[in-house]
Image 1 (cartoon, rainbow, N blue to C red):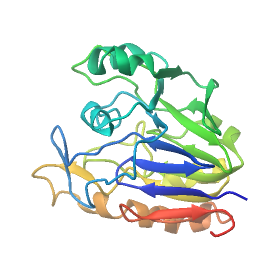
Image 2: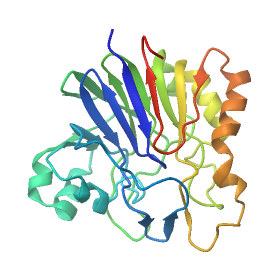
Image 3: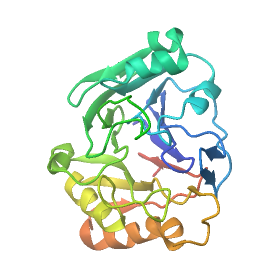
Image 4: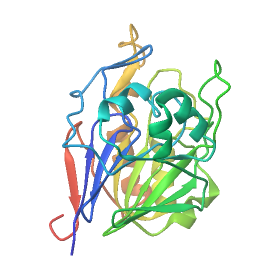
Length: 258
């Protein structure tokens, strides 16, 4: 039986390898995103160019154009429905030609892995300064394992429809001390998401990486603690799941050697 491996590179950047197919989620490969600075972990050192990049929504800390340009090669770009025009304007027609737009329920195939878009409860616009808008989505990938990358999301009823899963990559924090609960999961809500999705394994993401410059001491527990808090709360809320808290650059392999 094939194994599935996941390497967390901080924030929402995950290298997922399943059945010989490589996928990269929401890559941030630099040490700065506007006013946000990488405060922990190394700058990502990817093993190569992925077969496809999964982009959950247009916010700059998820759809980071400078990082996409750094990838090189010609990976397929799988984006939310409505984001194709932004790809064409920001990255050019060549990138647009390898872009696939998906709405929840729609799917595509990358190598031996099926990639399906699923809902996310999050604002999908580029930002208040931009007219660029698209829906926000998550992804379920199906190869040797059935994995859910939630993107950026709050709780939503259809999470239960995702079950059962082998692996869930769940956002349990954010990039600043004032980030609210609307459209986001904290550790407790992340544990509830895991309960609904019924994943055998879970990895917390979207925390402990980016933080506003000059605010390193402001509510620093919101930077450091979400992953460990998620693991602790999940023991009670989702006792049938195993949570693995990864350090940036660390890999979890599930399958016969897990």
